[in-house]
Picture: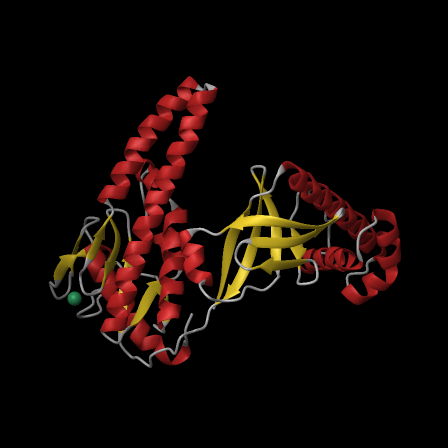
Length: 359
Ligand SMILES: [Zn+2]
């Protein structure tokens, strides 16, 4: 499994301007190449290289490898659509490869710029340290600029453990009141996270009204805190679920991400609480922790998971008269709606098992 880590670069001001200049020139070169590619209708990488390599080198004073990366970026971009001219922002990502970037342990990255190589300290988050723990990371990364800070998006390959061959699954349903509920009926409450979000939302409204510089600073600090808390909760839930699945020899079944957004209908107030990034993150955590533990993850069709009866299979909108309660209109089976959904998810994974491997 490939995991992408966002690693912060601790540049000093000189390094910052070197990287920024490189980024600008690189994207300028991309725009030049794009123009040529579009006008001459050359979208093949090799042909485009033959056409413009020397000209780009000469014109932008870029190293050979940078020119090749720029051509690559342009041809990749045109793969999706050749009907319009593609342009690139001055601060668009640079794709670095091993010849342009290398890592010195987990402390430094050696990065090529227009002004030569620079050695930049970097910081890995706690979660990231866990992922790369003892693993060599390859010198292949996207350099991006977010809010004035440079990051490297590093792709790390995680060994797939040795997936247990299982026909039994722990289904997990995501929600708002409960962040997650499994098919055994265990619920992970969202009360604490939602409480903090609500408090912060109130404070946010107040501070936004003020609009002063210090209010803005405070606002930023608080949203950071809120995120960090939600991240901790997600780690905790993912760890628990994976440990349970592993301990009972089961795989984990989840709904498709697309399905979650469609199915969870929320009113406006809840929508703010229903931060999709938090759910996306929880799924990522479950997937990577499961993969490390050798627990297979199966994604199932999310349609009607909350309306189908896990006992008799009857599907009916009326089976779920309120958000929290399920009662089958056909056989009378009743229970909390979210754990019923989780049971349906687990059931679907068992049925579709022969077709899917480890996610
Ligand atoms: Zn039923």
